[in-house]
Amino acid sequence: MAKIFCVANQKGGVGKTTTAVNLAAGLAQLKQRVLLVDLDPQGNATMGAGINKSELEASVYEVLLGMSDIKTARKTSDTGNFDILPANRELAGAEVEMVELDNREKRLKDAIALVTDEYDFVLIDCPPALSMLTLNGLCAAHGVIIPMQCEYYALEGLSDLVNTIKKVHAKLNTDLKIIGLLRVMFDPRMTLSQQVSAQLEQHFGDKVFKTIIPRNVRLAEAPSYGMPGVTFDPSSKGAQAYIAFGAEMVERIHSM
Ligand code: ATP
Ligand code: MG
Image (cartoon, rainbow, N blue to C red; front, side, top):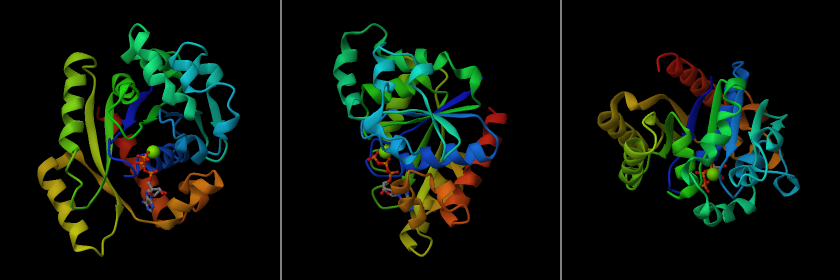
């Protein structure tokens, strides 16, 4: 049975999609069977996995609204060696359209349940908001991976996310926990990065992943080739870090 993880942070541009796509590809390299769910109308994870978001017959949108099923809508990323439930702009409409539906927070959970025996990991790339879509992600997951940049404002907003996770845990999904904070876009030459990183370790202890993802331009270049950085330049520092993070996640699920 797959372990299901959301990659979430309501702040925009903090590295959620880069983490979701490269962790998926890194886990695939470690022979794990992975499904990546793109839960963001921006469709960045879809494009980054090499799937053209403007040519989808079905997407996560149709699945959430019950107009298609997950086995029909999922695709395979040839550049990442994982499956993906893709998304595009249509998904923005789901927020409003789901309001009328029964069990609206658990539509994604119910959809994923049909395929969990086919995967070791399901990763969900959440949009930068604490919205109905993110709520669907949190209700479907066993845990949350929170990517963070080690900058002055990093901790601001974290308490909103933590409170949301606590509420979801209490009311909707008792399985849910914070798996860990992942330091991303890390620049070891900056004293501030070092300081914030040390602060995170002090406050959150073993909830901070050991792996640190450095700032690495190859990770930023890869999506324009429809490739995860891990595939695009496997020897780059960024790719190596995401593969190490994959190994850390495999270790974590054995102790869950
Ligand atoms: P959004 O909130 O819009 O969904 P996001 O949190 O998913 O954004 P990304 O799209 O992953 O963030 O990253 C934001 C930008 O930073 C992108 O241009 C990405 O290529 C770049 N980026 C992410 N991680 C790294 C890294 N480790 N090194 C260099 N650039 C990075
Ligand atoms: Mg994103």
